Amino acid sequence: MNKWILGLLVLVFVAFSTVAFAATPQLPTGIVVTGNTTLEKEPDQTQIFFTIYTTGKTSEEAQAENAKISSRVYQSFMADGIDRSAWKTVQMDLSPQYDNESGKVRGYQMSHAVLLTLSGTDKAGKIVSLLVDSGVENIQYIRFGLKDPKAAQREALAEATKDARERAEIIAAETGATIKSVRYVSEPRIVYQDNAGYANTNRYKTAGASIDQQVWAGSVNVSATVEIHFELVK
Image 1 (cartoon, rainbow, N blue to C red):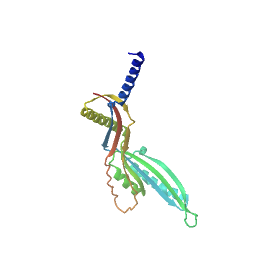
Image 2: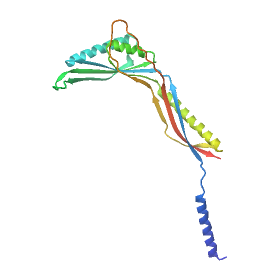
Image 3: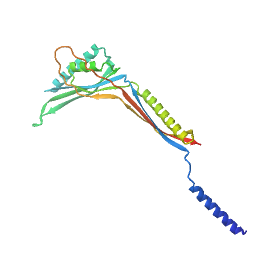
Image 4: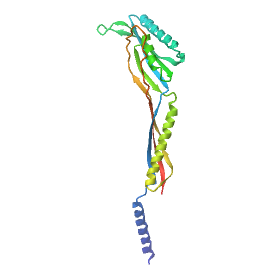
């Protein structure tokens, strides 16, 4: 056979082989699985955020009334055995109040925002009563949460990873494959949601003993989601 013709046949064979190889579908060698979990945890910490609002015709009157209520709150907390380090001032503000019609200053308002943090959840109702009896009219929220949310977040992440692995193993088994290794793990999404109740209280104090309000903590949720790429082998 002529060498020129032989060379041409070789080129044609290679070209057709390349086209046939490119057209052959590649079997999947991996699987992408998302693992999810949500854990319910019993809260072990209470946070109460409240604000002492007072007004007066002068700034001195507003400040004096605010100091009086703050002192009553302080004394009631100390009498109840609450550690001094449990509460702190978050914000204080003293501002003039203007008349809508004349635009002149008609008085002053002072606000003193305080955050109280306690171990456990059993004293929330009593604290509400102490605050109301002391003259506090605004409790912005009562929040029940975890002292160490990171521990619960790590647990949730481990459960989500386990969930992804179990799903991948089920799918692999049903397709006649097995997991060889992990190719890639996405940045996990972890959400910690404490249990917060938002409300404003108004002071309606009557003679006689105060009544402890019933406040229920409920549970807090910690969820995690992670995406994992597994390599499969037949």
